[in-house]
Image 1 (spheres, rainbow, N blue to C red):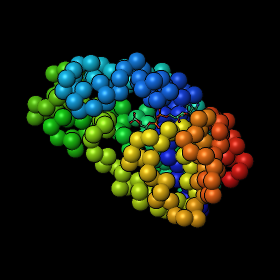
Image 2: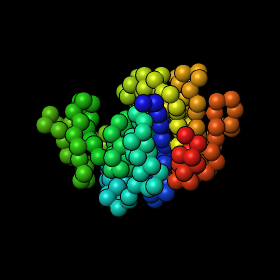
Image 3: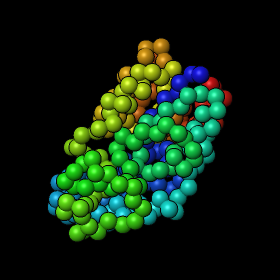
Length: 223
Ligand code: APR
């Protein structure tokens, strides 16, 4: 079976109703990203940051996977599929994709501020004062700007094994995620689906200038 590796970004979930980051002037659901997605922001105003992710976690209960998530899950009938997502939602898992790596963490998980390996599955709100057993504030299990990306080595290894690389809905501005395509073997074809792509078609890169759902239809016809 050929191995398809898929790198997804915020545009993957846009048609499910989850806003992207950079389509709204650097604001994420009305907030400055630096306010809600940095350790400094969390120190300055922990309550605001906890509430922000509480809202995002609630939103997960209201949104549904779109057809592009479903098409990716169905690819498993014919290919080995690995998904590397920058998204913190759980829409890939909810459509049944079985190999999903979250580079930037998961809304459905939280962790202790004192012990980064003390990670728990969580579907409710976190409040200021909610602590782990050792007394450290609980925080979202999200990789904020300036923090290490623990899953990047695993993601690199997966990209090195790609027979086909598919990139969907990312502005490719945030590293190290944006550098992953460089690890695909030289002969591996790359398909990039995005209505406002960050790069153009060239050599082995085929850009499909469409939304995730429309672009996936085109990709399925090409494969
Ligand atoms: N289908 C596919 N792509 C879309 C759609 C759609 N319906 N709508 C928008 N897009 C594209 C945009 O054209 C853009 O290229 O999705 C991309 C979204 O880019 P960003 O908002 O920058 O999101 P992403 O690349 O995932 O951001 C990376 O930055 O803020 C951090 O940690 C956060 O994981 C995030 C990372």
